Amino acid sequence: MDLQRYPWSSVSSGTGHLFAYQRAEAALRAQHPELSDRIEMHSPLSSLPAMLSVRLPGGRRVLLWLTRFARPHDFYPFWLIVGPDDEGLPRMWDAVTSPEVLADAVRERVRAFEEQRVEESPWRWDEPDGQASIIRLADALAESSFDVRLVVSGNRIRTTQTVDGVEAFPFREHEGDFLEFKVGHHSVRISRKREIGWLADVYDPELDVQWRIDLHWLLDKEAGSLPGYTEDDQVLDKLHQVIEAAVWDGPPENVVNSPPRKGARPRMAADRDRSDSLSPQQVLQVTMRELLALGFADVTIEADAESASLTSETLSIASTARSKTLGLADVKHLYADSSIAKKRLMVLLRTGGMTRPAEEFANRAGAFVFWADNETGLLAPYGGLAREVAFSEV
Image (cartoon, rainbow, N blue to C red; front, top):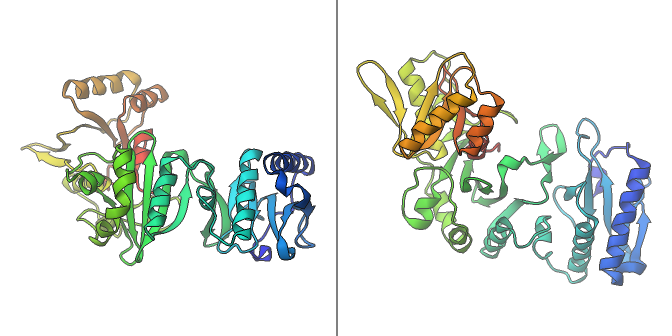
């Protein structure tokens, strides 16, 4: 990798960096003593500080550098491991990564160069735990010739390309463990969320839309009614065999468009250019289509002579339009009603919000809580489970 391609910060904590390098060097010498006579502090460029290095044949090196990007992308420090033949974006590790993990990652980079081969898993993914489910899936996909571009699990910081340059981006916990790969021009993200399990999302840049594959149908031939799939063995054994055909099947009826800028929410493709006001019935239809796109597959509109509402065989859907914040007693009452009906609770907040105790109870109770815009019907995640279910940025 050409280090001169990227703007590096000139600000660092000298003493803190010295101690970090000492710990990393001690771990490298203790775990891989065969490298001891090749370890030294070295500056690859006069404009850069000295960093820990391992000498390779032919005067080349593997470098371990604690650094950060230059302003305005200098928010997060990280460890950078630079190999002699790196291509693509800088490969980084979280600044709090243990010295022992860094030592093994450096050793594998050295060994792969000397043996002229690809790094072994999990180090090829810049991850520490080869037994993590997402790492095992990445290995299966790679062995099946899929172009796996990104794997995120224990090490949650990666280089991200933005319109303003590169930055170190820490992926949030609600995104779960995930990987991304290509199928033709499609980008596919497979994620494993802590509470709801596995999701498979597809992005088509030509159509500028995202959609979600029903893993229940793909792996078990039984349509799912809720987003998320919890059978690890099925995913690890079968997904790499069937995912490509599922992607090429194309989008279903309900898709979302990609967000116009980072931080914005994906939206229903049919509603992205809408500027006219909607009737209450149209607002409800937008909300229903968003829920269907997320994987709440049996949500429908139930209408009578006076009003219409959302209904489901698996969900107890409570839509609140009062200005007063929902309290703990309110949410417990909604949860009791859903339990009596033997359904999962979903709360759509059209006005107001929840108190902190109410939100914590809703999360513990496994409730899906969304903001639902009263004028557009568009959804935004409010509770923890809703954040897990939401589409990711692309």
